[in-house]
Image 1 (tube, rainbow, N blue to C red):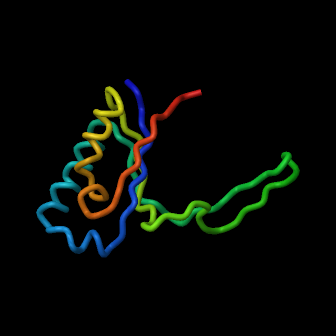
Image 2: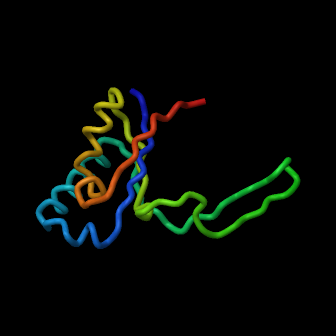
Image 3: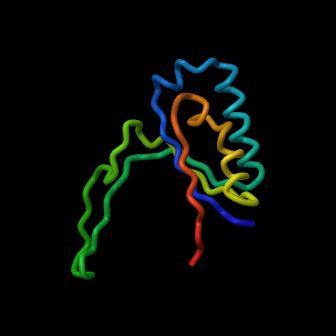
Length: 109
């Protein structure tokens, strides 16, 4: 079955203004996805890694990309197709709590 990388963006303000029963249902939905085999986690502090011309590793603390909302978490899910993946993540906390979820097809090498 195809795999998809999902990236959830959201902030505490959006989460707090979402009704608790909607948040609870979204967290329950995430638990269901985990039981179905999704690999999920919250975003920690990022580190940028560079190794130009394989001449030496250089790291920088902090994110490389910028967004109006912070990255909240990641998941690897399986779905029949992108439409199914969208349906699965549309009920996740970031999607329902005024955030956004990106869905990226994972093309395995």
